[in-house]
Amino acid sequence: MASSQTRPAKERALRKAPEDCQTMAEVRAGVDELDRQLVALLAERFRFMDAAARIKPQRAQVRDEARKRQVIENAGRTAESLGLAAGIAMDFWEALVEASIGYEMREWERRHAQKQATVPQPSGR
Image (spheres, rainbow, N blue to C red):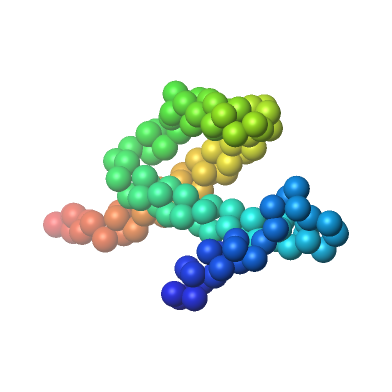
């Protein structure tokens, strides 16, 4: 696993900056590397969704509209600070947060069902 952790740094060093690309092969190589990094970050983000599902005691706590709005607005502000249109990031984050909520809900339900299955049931005697 150590090689996958060191690979992104090596590949980033070899990847050209977008403004330095002269061929579509270079552009595609850069995009492919960024996609690998994004997927790795998504996997890590969803591990936090696993943690949230484990920590939240009530199913109703999974969907938090105020937090959703905060996360999307934060993404928009960050995008603007990096020269990306806020709307692009906010639309992307809307989909990401909804996917995260769906995932967390399924994980919460799975964990809750497991807990229910391990709780001793009264014998009725």
